[in-house]
Amino acid sequence: MKAWRGIATRYDKSPDTAWRRLRDWTETGVWPRLHATLLSELRHADVLDLDDCAVDGSHIRALKGGTMSAPRRSTVPAPAPSII
Image 1 (tube, rainbow, N blue to C red):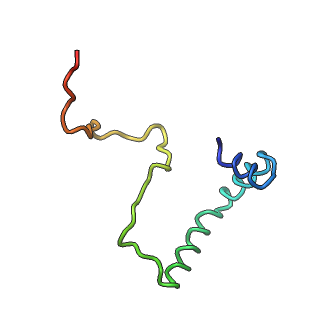
Image 2 (cartoon, rainbow, N blue to C red):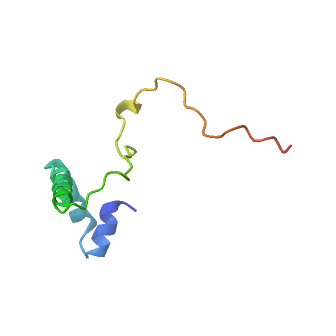
Image 3 (cartoon, helix red, strand yellow):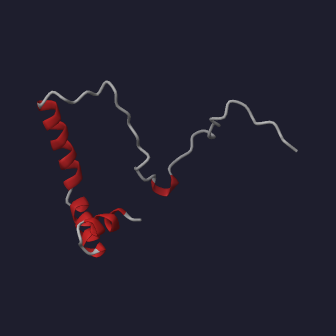
């Protein structure tokens, strides 16, 4: 389910209205400003602890597939034996 469809269902709004608002807020930079405000308030309250954090860029789209500088490495320690 698309994110705006879930929001629309939860707040009894049409999916089209939710999608338009999401689009408009994204285009006007609401999300980065909201993120900066949240971080600022957490820092001010001295409750932001970056000692235990993770950075995940999986939500960032790679335009034209990105670049591959090296072949992908397997995360498997050794190939599994054949059962045939």
